[in-house]
Length: 285
Image (cartoon, rainbow, N blue to C red; front, side, top):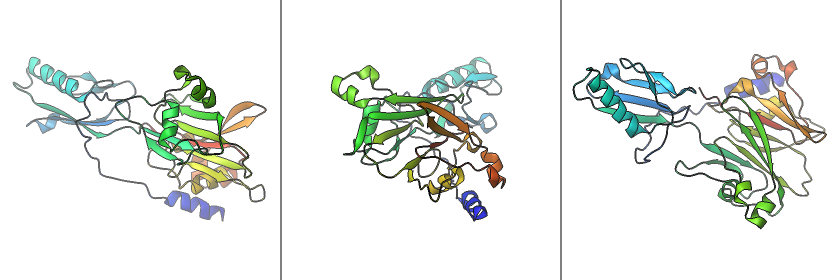
């Protein structure tokens, strides 16, 4: 049976879609690490370049050398490249076009305690705060524990944060500073009052992030929990999967040897406990 579970996980199809250029009417969108760009030079295809914006923000663009592309918008990058190609004597009247082929994921995951738990896409043109994100999910459910909201956040450098927020106080006092700005790939878990069923949560880069019923009799492992959540999506950093477990009032991060599990070493699969959170971070490259 264990091998069947592993086979299902490995067989989960990836959502492979052809790259499409992003609409250019989103003026001023600044590129971030993980965006996929294409730089086209009119009538000079040998100078065209397709690249992923790296963490350090610069790429090599022959014959100009290193060019900074992070935190730049398409138009400013086009103007700079045209100027440098002309000033450097490479092309007399260059025409450069910069296209966004794929944006880094800007999803936020909202689980439990809301009317429409699901993943939602953050807007490009404005910040979204916690209470606004919850409103995207239809607002709090009738049994939501508004004093018990958890935000899980993983940075590009792999740092993990667990933020606990009392939204009841925010809503009552109108304290905008306490209403945290949501970042891409945040997971928001709203507590539920009087829940009879014990649950585990699967969040991050899986196909169906959400809460899943935990049974003491049947038990639940990391591998099975990820399968219940539809398997990894194409952006998953599988090898960085970990468990968040609250123990004696403190949150512990427990590493999962997912690479070993995917090699078939099922003895390394870990049993989950009620209220565990299995978190699959995003692979930025």
